[in-house]
Length: 86
Image 1 (cartoon, rainbow, N blue to C red):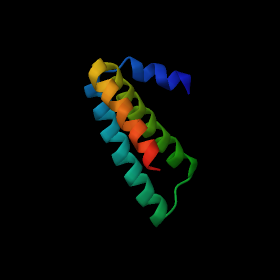
Image 2 (cartoon, rainbow, N blue to C red; image 1 turned 180 degrees about the vertical axis):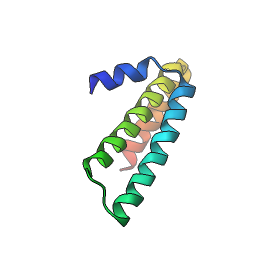
Image 3 (cartoon, rainbow, N blue to C red; image 1 turned 45 degrees about the vertical axis):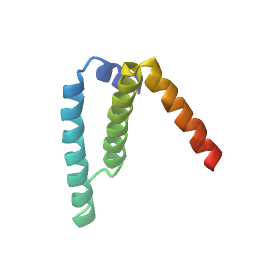
Image 4 (cartoon, one colour; image 1 turned 90 degrees about the horizontal axis):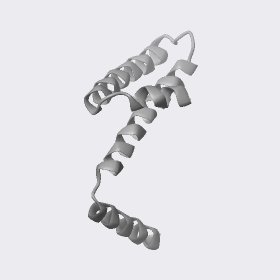
């Protein structure tokens, strides 16, 4: 798992978006194939889904790093307010 994270850290945002689109298309195709005729290794579905999640996580981490202190403060206030509503 750490190996995958290192590979993502070296890529640009545009590369990550392209890879995300590719993986989502691959996942949809695999789900369809599995529903119609079955695939040889259904665990591949889980691996692709996890890779999609890894890319989304990396994108979100980069968004948080790029935020200004004011935006981070607003985000913290929103999180506190949401917790109180529950």
